[in-house]
Image (cartoon, rainbow, N blue to C red; front, side):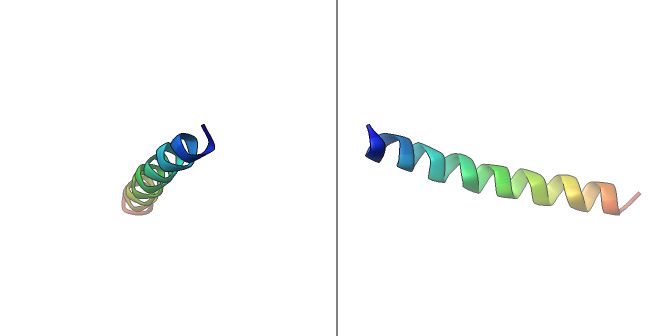
Length: 30
C-alpha cells in the first residue's frame, strides 16, 4: 500500500507543482 501511495503521490506532486507554477505565472502576468 505505502509503495502504491508513494508512487501515486509522486505523480500528483509533479502535476501539482506544474499546475501551481502555471497558475502563479498566469496570475503574475495580467
